Length: 211
Image 1 (tube, helix red, strand yellow):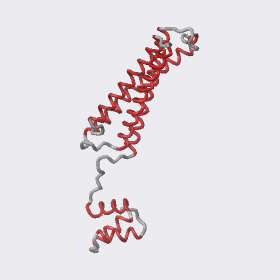
Image 2 (tube, rainbow, N blue to C red):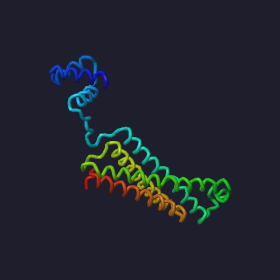
Image 3 (cartoon, one colour):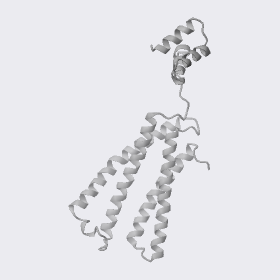
Image 4 (cartoon, helix red, strand yellow):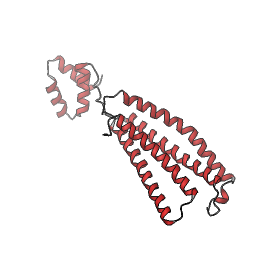
């Protein structure tokens, strides 16, 4: 038992009310949270429940992990797709044309393949656990940290869609839109649209996106 708990229990045995105990502890320099925990343990004999929507270190770690795994997976998935497209539609004007089949180039794509194989299942598990936990919360009471990362993912994916549409029109107006460029932009649009739709669906389901 801590000093504050012993003081509170002793004061309650002497008949001193909780308001007076709170005043004495505050004047002695104790913090509100410490006093609240002490009163809960010494008076109610129950820990103070955390209100829905309050995030802790675990929620922050899980949100960063989920966002990092998604970003890592998408980056290496794009590298793999671009590598396959470059080999399927070789362009001699591409500065990397002569390195496509080199051992260095193949090694980089092997690493990207290994990264996707490892990180995507991890992301799926972490995201599934997060959605399952959010399903136990009351409506519209998602943890602020998780909600913030959801909006960040929505913003990044939305800006990616916008940027690729601008690039598509630019190359078209320039008269330099080639099949390889069109396919690469298409891959980015499909991935970004999938992420955007998934996050928007989650936000709407959890009450963070008004229809």
